[in-house]
Length: 209
Length: 177
Image 1 (cartoon, each protein chain N blue to C red):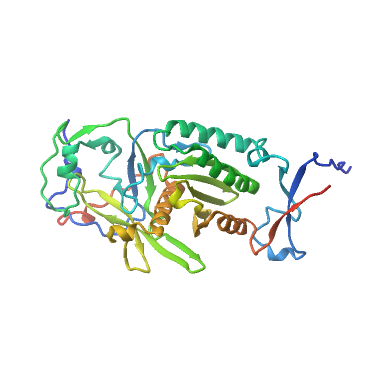
Image 2 (image 1 turned 180 degrees about the horizontal axis):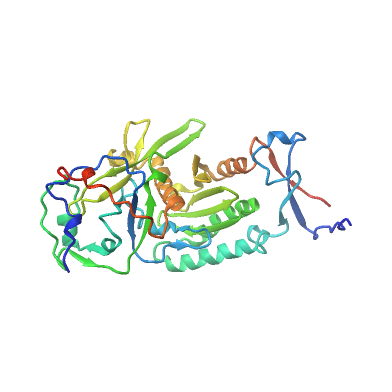
């Protein structure tokens, strides 16, 4: 099984900064039982397991990154080597099957349209208890996946991202609120069926098209 | 021909939505007419028996128990879970949501998601002692995000009821007999 080279960083790639409103994100789930058919929304448990990384939720930009790739699962060694942020034009070795990655076809997945979640405001304004944060979709290439994007919250009052704060700050009460906001936002807008493909024009991710 | 009035069963309270005479101050509550009966409660029973006849409650309780059996390695405080669940149910089901579900999350919490007309609510109650009595809820009108709320259970319920019954009307338990 060869690793798909199209999702690895390469020296002709750059950070994607164009408007992605019409694009969709995809994220894997641990299993395929992820949907509440009655409410027609994703289950909370399917969003992030168990509750880590809600300040920097990993997704991939759908397009060049296709559904087949959500089944790529890094091994422990693969995590050590490839699960790191990197520049978009970083040179990386190609992951090796069984050593760095396996195929986990028990996984499920969901999609979300960027338009529905970007710049959404989470606002708490009760008595003196105020918090305002804005949802941002950030291109955050990783060594295993150039198409890696993060769902993050920008804290308007602190003028910084939630994930950039120290551990003590992250443990404050509003962290639970933003974790709640992330999950409810995804539950509200996640979809289970493949949306219309919107493959980004090459000029937006290649230095030289 | 007018329908004959059928009195409620003994020991039953009818919850009425009471408002002032000027209906124009309730522009968002068109789905709730004045003095609409929005629920029934057996006042002689415990919290659970109050609403045990309600199919939504039974479905929620069944779902919660199934989830607890699957996550028993993760949660070991079923009495606490049941208490939080039943307390929340007794208030949320009075809102007569169109659809409602409950989920035992990996966040040491119980989350109710429910829809009423064009509103969607996510009402999260924390289980562990360090967050006891803490509630966070967020809501959407159609696809538009609305301000969220965090606080203790009672203040969160009050805030939620104001969402459903805007411009500060109030709920009253009105014993008809």
